Length: 259
Image (tube, rainbow, N blue to C red; front, side):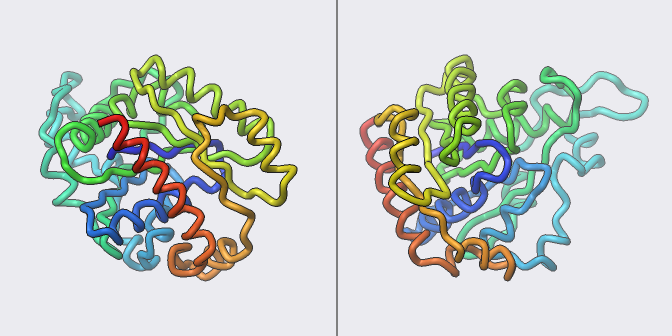
């Protein structure tokens, strides 16, 4: 199971990604959660302390490691496009609540076609996670669609787009579905978050095909309280966890059908 969680900023994708990862860990599965967001806060949502997270340097910022693995350097413009990365998750991942966190970070670039050494490293690591590991892998992607333009997430089993009940979120879903097709990812599903009432549910059902909609997560002040306390939503809101558990059951059924 290799899932990339995406969506526009502020929709709650990190809360969903972290809770989903912990639900798989609860089953005794080997789970790796990768934070590919420059505003990295997946660790807090998994239950890491701020002190622990302060000690973690994103892989994309480890210049010495990148130079060592790719052969790139100030005096060398040529570098390997297939560096060794299979040991990185175990060497640099940190475990909390049964989930191994790998903070990848992102590559700051003005263009979608970046082929810099840092990007090569991230792409190879994600490719390794997707193709060569038996773990459940959950990627918490950066907001927006630039990562898809760079091809970083090709090879995933599915994209899950977290949306709010609004036109801009629906447009994000449509763009993700279009770009995913170009990457060869056939499964694009939607989780509708921050649902307040039946009108919100009706809006989502009107704009999202039934076969793509995994379920609803209702507006929940406990999630906000967890964020203020620096706690994992998994430990703070039973109702949110149960809603995401139902969504996970649907994900598992889809995965079984595709095997």
